[in-house]
Image 1 (cartoon, helix red, strand yellow):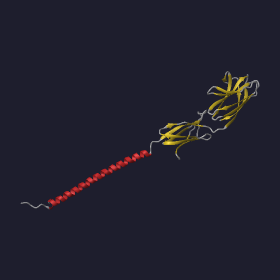
Image 2 (cartoon, one colour):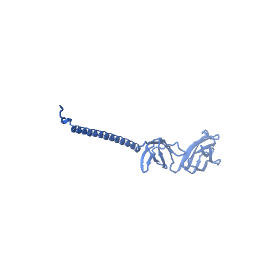
Image 3 (cartoon, rainbow, N blue to C red):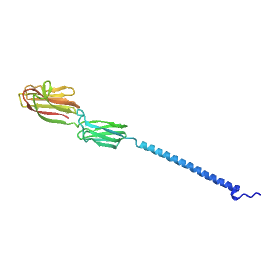
Length: 253
């Protein structure tokens, strides 16, 4: 004898259970999909932010070097020179040279303008592109002025030879600018003959020299070329004993 289905086993009840199971499965699937999409979005945003950060803060570079005087004294280092890097109207780096003229600028990127200044020198400006670490030496030209100088010394027959067999006292004249030179040499001893020369060591050329004989004074004049090193030479031409002398010069720096 068959019995009636219980409430739990009726077709209606089984249908309702299946519907509930389907709904639960759909909710689970939707949750998994939502979680996957959210995870992907978070990953994508993280990568995008990292990429954007890389673009916003590219690698920076360093510029270093030495600040010296211009020719003919490029071996003279300039301490306390102000060295600046500008990007438009914004200063991006600055430094002061040490006692040996060294400077270091860091954090440079792209187009910059380098500005160098020091008391007593003409300023220097140059546009640069910072795309690698570089070394750049800069030579500053002194502000033009006239140098008036009086030198006293002693000329001797035993002075080191510099002109034929004759001994010399040598005094450098470093011209950064074009201009005239005037020099007068006087000495008290009539038994000694001195000669004054203007000489260029780089070329071995005597530009001019005194021509007067049997005198106690020689005077010369010349036009100096900027960027050239000269020497004034007091030549002991003739005599047997030392003599004092005075050398008065006027020339561009």
